[in-house]
Image (tube, rainbow, N blue to C red; front, top):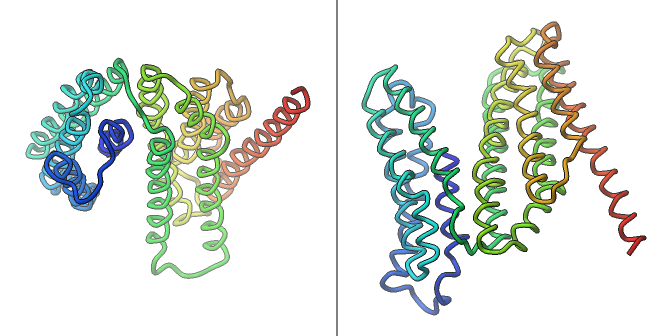
Amino acid sequence: MWRDWFTEHCCSSCCGGCGPPLRGPPTGPARRHQTLPLGGDGGQPRHGSGVPDAFEDGGAWFAVTYFIVRLISVALSWLGARANQAQREALLTFLPLATVTPLLVLVGGFLDSPWRTVLWVLAFAVDLISAISAGRGTSQIQARHFAERNGLFVIIALGESIVAIGFGVVGEERSATLALSLGVVFAGAAALWWAYFDKPARDAERYLAGADDKEQGRFARDAYSILHYPIILGIVLYAVAAEEVVDHPNDALDGFNRFAISVGVALVLLAVVAAAYRAVRRVPTERLVAAVVLTGLALFGGELSALPLAALVDVVLIASLVIEHRNRARLDAERKSVD
């Protein structure tokens, strides 16, 4: 689903400037260019509704809607680059593989397990290879719009996580422990928002805006397409474990949920560290240390009950961000005084 989003918004960010601005109602190719996104957006709710049952009885529904939405994204990308030969050559570095993925998902949706799982894992691998192969041509990316659209997906993932946690406690008896548990997991979600949208994100956007056409494509591939996989995955893992924290705050988490709440947050931090290094060749050591500590909690925090473990994850995450913010402010002040 992340690649669906990325492929579609790549067209609006990379190909929006391929032609002259429109005046009046769109006609001809411009009309098709504006109608296709509506078709893709119309399919997204149906596609999303199939996610919970995708590996059970809803596999065909999920696969068909995924296939339609993904092909619309591919067609939109190609039409968006119709007036720019360099853009088309750049798209050809990954679009052929990008069309294989929906075919594998479609076939897998009509098969039973384990073949469905095998084909969908293969589809993910092909999609990852297509992402890696992208960025070898020239791109003309509207950096602000591009970064904003990636950020919107992160906001959606965080928002859906909070909604899912809220639905999980419908009908539960109201208590001080429940309120505290909800406060702790919400604080963690808010801190993940901070971890994504703080200074490293602005550094990445500035670097993208100042890069030449070839470097824009490579940086978009590395920092946004590939490195957003662990960011979205980390948010989802945190949400899964957060539901368990709210449901059973006084019980120890099992190994998976302990891993999800600790390493999920660490994945977000490490992905942002990698993106920051790719942009400014600087490693935010505060986040790196926090990721190591969080991994330690996943390995050695088995004796802790769910609520204290979640609170410790929050403390480690927020402390790393506060220290980083203070250190960056001090460095910025020193640079200004030198100038």
